[in-house]
Length: 313
Length: 152
Image 1 (cartoon, rainbow over the protein chains, first blue to last red):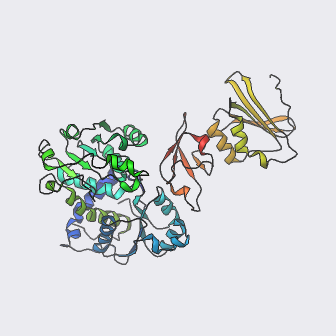
Image 2 (image 1 turned 180 degrees about the vertical axis):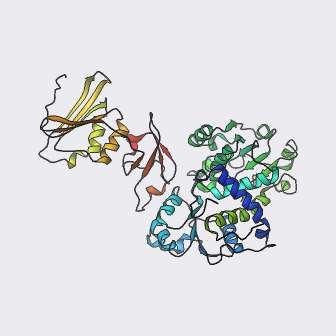
Image 3 (image 1 turned 90 degrees about the vertical axis):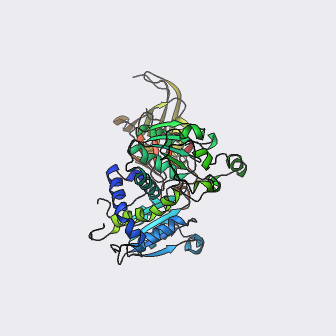
């Protein structure tokens, strides 16, 4: 694997072949992620979790991934207890951490923070979300979920629904979908449309992109309905948030018009965008998606840090 | 060569073919307040030009441009040429040249970019498109086209 010792800051750091390698390795990691098989390629490795912004599933799934691979974690889960409160820069904090750990996983509220961390650290850095910027491991697990459901990624029709402006997951995901020749349908309230820069890049990468604000029409013939939460914390003006909150909601009745094999995905946590009555349908893929976070992050950490292969799978 | 209505300089730099109206921005980049107090700075605004129709010219005595300032001028006045004058003669004449990376010249337009926080790093942009120039922040990936408003 070519990822050994490398940083992962943006999904654009990966070629299509490298993404495919991670996804193939992630499939083999599933029994190890479930605990039915055991291997320890990260024995004696320490991974620092530098979380400067609240996170539950991302941090816990990374910690779980490290421990399933036999490694250990040192964790900053709350920036207010670090020396950054005393005015220490992120640069210096990361520099210090890189002397305590073999790799660093970072989440931070400022865009570009992960790139800065990668420059400050002489150990590999994995971006677990930088503000409204990139979240490449979320993209990898999203792709893994689609690939598991359909056996392939090429040619899928994927609807990205909801907050396409602030939702960092969709920017990374849209880029990756373009790489695999997927058809992307953008469906959002006008005030939360995909920013021009992201849209232009998608077109430049040859993606087939269309806009359809109406969810019902957007869903026609779609294979994947990818729903995002409206990011309340990214709104400067709460009145603006109130205007768009609740402007879309997926429920079982709406899905009756969908293709039988359509899967509904969501990076979670959801805040009313998907009604609980979808959970029991065959369309619901979001819990599987959150489970796949562990084998995908295991595959990635193993590729970046792992020792000699010991026959995964 | 046509006679210009500003005096020749013995030693220094002439920045010619500046797009009409941008000379004052060029002066801002040069930092006129930092120029040697015994040196003359001449500015010609709205001068006839064969190539551009109208142009501006800036001449600064006893100063040669640093690469950083030259990069900044290349961003806002891509048609400019720089002549180095020694003993009243043009010793070197070149168009401004935009390098692949621009460090420390601009502020990132994204207020939430880590380079706009109190961190010990300089802003850094990659030239991702030429004619027209588009720069992309090497940290947060934000594109910037309106350079005048983002000079550091």
